[in-house]
Structures are given as C-alpha cells and as structure tokens.
Image (cartoon, rainbow, N blue to C red; front, side):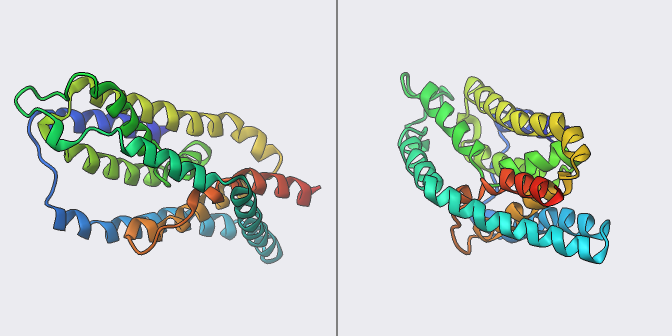
Length: 249
C-alpha cells in the first residue's frame, strides 16, 4: 500500500501549496502533459505484463496471455450487460452539475458560497476517485507494490486541485483527500490482504496482468485521443481470477 500512502502525502502537500498560492500550469502546458502521462501509464501497465510473462515458460506464458485477453473480452461483455459505463457516466454528469465553479467562489473569502461547498467538494472528490487509473493502479499497488500508476493519478489530481488556486478551501481539500484515501485504500488494502491467497492459488499473476491491461486500455483516454468505456472492463479483474482458478484446476 506504499503508493496509497504516497498519494495521500502528495495530495496533502499539494493542498498546502495551493493554499499558499501555487497556481496551476497554463492550459497549453497541461495539454502537453497528456502525452508524457499517457506514455508513463503505458509503461506502468505494460511492465507487469512483461515481468509476469518472463517468469513463465513458453506454453505457460501463452496460456496466461490468452487467459487475460479472454478475461478482458468476457469482462467487457459483463460490464456492458450491467451498463456500468452508462450508469457511471450518468452519475458523473449529475455530480458535475454540483461541482464548485470558479466564477462562484469568492477569492477574497477563499471559500465557496454557503450551501454549495460541502456537496460540491464531496462530488469533486468522488469524480477524482472515478479516474480510470484508480482501481487497476490500486490493485497493482496492493498486489505487487507497484506505485507508478497511483503516482500518475496523483499528478492528475494535483492538476485538478491547482485549478482552484487559493479558492480551494481547507475543509474541501481535506474532504477530497479523505475520499481518495478511503477509496484507493479499499482496493489496495483489499488486494494486499488477499495477495497470499492469490499466490497460493497461483492466480496472482493473472490478476496482476489483468490490472496492467486495464491501465494500458486507459492510455487513449489519458492522451485525449478517444474516450473508452473503461468502467465496462472492470469485471475482467475478478473474471481473470475465476478463469485462472478454473484453468489451473
């Protein structure tokens, strides 16, 4: 869970710096950051794929790769059947309408108008938690102590928070931090807790590879090339564990 604690520490530091007056980078610089971040996400997702395959013999590697790809396809079908992306998009749209707006926040008071702050900052924290990198990177953090994915998410979170400047209230920032820590801690802590069981059952590699594939699938969205229905792919994580257990048996 090192990445989860590092993420919390960096977010707290970022909140303090924003309150001290550190501003967000210009829009053109932020846009240029998309490609380096997407490249780093590609590496963060591809590295567990390569490392796990290197530990296997030729037939084992082919079986593991086939298993993860089949899990991705079946997981996508399950996710689409459940309408995960559709529900998540609808929820996100509803939350977006309640977010604090820069033109409604008092720069002098450095707080949002009474009645809009609590729900608005809470919704903002939830939207940040719904980043497509959150679940797969948290799983990799818990299973293999791979922190790069959560580090990339931290950068994206900091850019979003910095856009509010000193208008970001302390209570709102701490609320956002709490939501991120609880949500990421749930996935990374849960993955850490079941890691020994997954390793004894010889299915940890499949879950780690599937999380890596999900991070790779997030690359086009991070680069701004196209939106991907990433929520529909999330069932592929438990699907990989289930198929690996069946195949082993």
